[in-house]
Amino acid sequence: MQTATVGRAVSSVPVPGSDSAPNATLSGRVDLTPTIAHFVVRPDDGAPAFVPGQYLALGLPVDGRLLQRPYSTASKKGTRDELDFLVRLVRDGAFTPRLWHLDVGDRLRIGRPKGLFTLCPEDPRRHLFIATGTGLAPFVSMLGTLLRESRPPRAIVLHGVSHVGELAYRDRLERWAADAGDISYVPAISRPNHPANADWRGATGRIDTALGPLCDALDVDPAETVAYMCGNPEMIAAGERILEARGFPRDAIRSEHYWPAGSPARA
Image 1 (cartoon, helix red, strand yellow):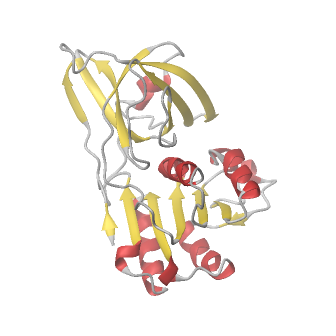
Image 2 (image 1 turned 90 degrees about the vertical axis):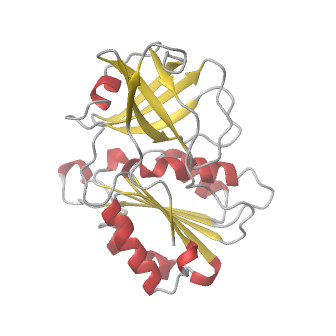
């Protein structure tokens, strides 16, 4: 089992100097809910080369220092101009409330791509992507990149959220699933009785309850599948137990936590 970049670092460094000056512009924004939004960032020198799954730090000046937080990009490999980030607002956090106040055209800092939670190159196995919330972003990057191959591997995307409005990239994933016969997109709502989900007719329940039935329904062969998980560490721990119990080899399960297990998210 491979776990990459668990508990990503948060940094605050002095603003003066070329390494902390703004070097990018917020070029677009779409609010999915009051607490989840797409932020599109255009680096001054163009998007840096990155490997799908990697993250970049976004930074803003706060009290004379540069406050930074790392976010995986949802953009596919080879993107040249703008990078797409899916961000959740932490209302009592230090960074995201300030990010939420930015307008299109405002300046910010973007760091270099980092991280080891990346696609295994030329892996022919079926890819099982399991995400909660904004943890979907790196998988959109990975799958968008895979679909440019002449013979992309089969793929399954299981995305768990609390409310329908949080299903980021839903239209894109549904289109990919419709256009490519070997892709399955399964969104799951954990709070089906909430009024916001009144019209939902899809899968319900937490990821740890949906994962087993999904593997049965789609005939997932552990010997021929590689699983990637990203999001809530409790989901990842439960998912690892389920997959191992189903016969997944430990090296066929790759995961990244968005914060250390047992610690609150601080953004």
